Length: 349
Ligand SMILES: [Zn+2]
Image 1 (cartoon, rainbow, N blue to C red):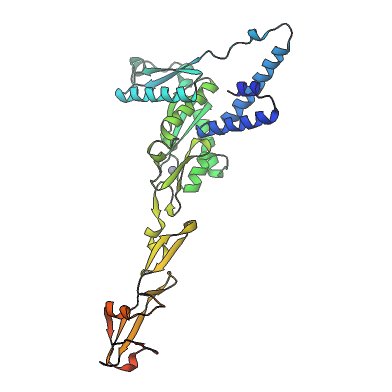
Image 2 (cartoon, helix red, strand yellow; image 1 turned 180 degrees about the vertical axis):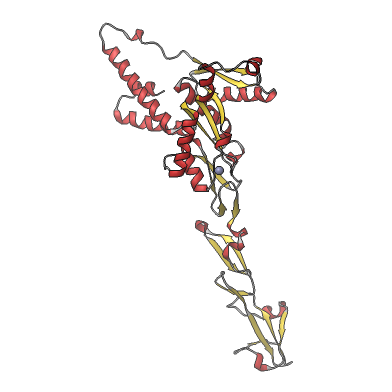
């Protein structure tokens, strides 16, 4: 794609715009930043070489190999029955969408072979297959996300690096950022080897496929985020859950602000979320205050003709109407006029 883009775009500005667009598409599809960068660098080198060849007078354009032939990639999965068939179909579907130039061939591996049971590991070959050039998964102990990565070196070396990043809180490490920002810890005792692949390019493709398929995708159960959170894919393909406005929590669990201690409002106030997602506290009818503190507000009344006195809970602080008294329950019966507030509300009886 990069080679095509660099060859077709005629001006540098146009190239720049298209490269930016391509990067965004790749990012949206969960490709890690370093892979995108490396891909672009390699594309630039290949393009330069093609242009050089085109300029040599002895060669014609027809000699440049057509990039249309599909490359075949093998993917081996452990076979666990019907679920494995479904998994294979989904992986193929993702690959057709993301990598149209690659033909993905999926083969199943028996979960336990006689060789695996009875024969010792072949020195070198089998040993290296199990310890290096791997796509791996590290689960988080405290939430249901996992980090998926790849390494060409020894798996243990890479794990030590991840642990060091967490200790140093390295900003560019997705593992460190997840662990430290949420106070979660990754389970390095349960690191899973997802796939072996000797070639770097194929390994990163497998890494992306695994990430897309199961873990770093928001399309499956909102990525493990709360229903009131927004799921996004952060650095290193790690799912990032952010509570929606009006909700608080770690993203895996989000609670409405008003459901926690009435959002800081008084017990006699109603909590709601206003514009700009600010908590709004409104005193309930019969109470006055700023919402954080609300006090019962009485209207005192005196019916001179029948010498009746009393107090009712007001429905509002500023207006007084006959209906306030008639419709309200008398909360306090007064016996002397001295108890009346000054000036009392004269009830026209
Ligand atoms: Zn976590």
